[in-house]
Amino acid sequence: MQETMKTAQLGETGLEITRVGFGAWAIGGGGWEFGWGPQEDDDSIQTIHRALELGVNWIDTAAAYGFGHSETVVGRALAGLPERPYVFTKASLVQGPGGRVVHNLNRDSILAEAEGSLQRLGVDAIDLYQIHWPNPDADIEQGWSALAELKEQGLVRHIGVSNFDVDQLQRIQQIAPVETLQPPYSLIARGVEDTLLPFAEDEGIGVIAYSPMGSGLLTGAMTRERIQGLPENDWRKHSESFQEPQLSRHLAVVERLKQVAARMDTTPGAVAVAWALHNPAVDGAIIGLRRPDQVDSILHGAGLELSDADVSEIEHGNRLEDEAR
Image 1 (cartoon, helix red, strand yellow):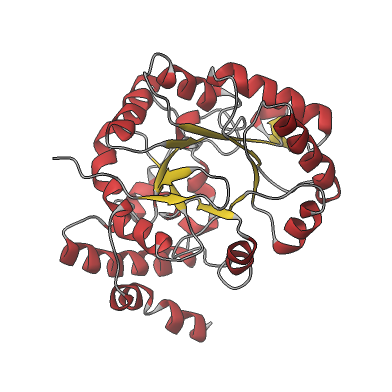
Image 2: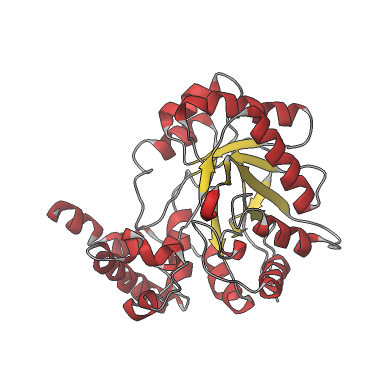
């Protein structure tokens, strides 16, 4: 019998979300600056449906992912469902020449993006609308005011930001409350732990962590050989995290995840997700899935309870490595 998936309140939004959500970055496909190479849309739709069958109740996408392609695929997956999950998307990255992204926080651009997202997703209101990146920094107040305007109009239900720091959050809080924050957070990206996550917790800002499996690095399936074989239009092939000297450190973390996973009869990726969710500031984590056969094992991380001893075992070495640097 299928266990009920654990949920948490997303800050003070009133939304009760499953501890993990479906991340739709990769299913945007290739052809743009941060693409993951070609994807099969029918596989993507089956993957979304499998995650929803298992109880996931939110999907996180963005207009930038494949310049609308991810949202279109999500819209196709939602069409005809008797009950749809919450849909979260983002604005501020628009299509530039040669598949590059251009940062734009101008009011008119944001309003136009929202209209395009609503059409592609096939929904009458976006459950959570987020500024994707705080660039240009000088325009974050204008961009945030546009999101507040969309909320007043009822076109979006809740508003939040991604990739903002504390100073930027404090600036835009003067305009309208920041309901949610989406930072990168994983065993290989822990920079938000010291000030950003505590600030969000103190302010009642809901947190959904992205890339808790390090964009695939922490799943246990990523090897040097596999990285070499990634298509040229997969952004990870050229990322410093996937190259030396960082790669060896990251693969050492994977070995520790494997030890804990073996003891808990689960996967390294599921343990990596559970590690991110162990932080009391984190309400939910986004997991990127591309094939139906990936869903079951990784979703297991939503229900794993790591002990302090497990966390210490996973992190051991991070501290030693940090001290050595």
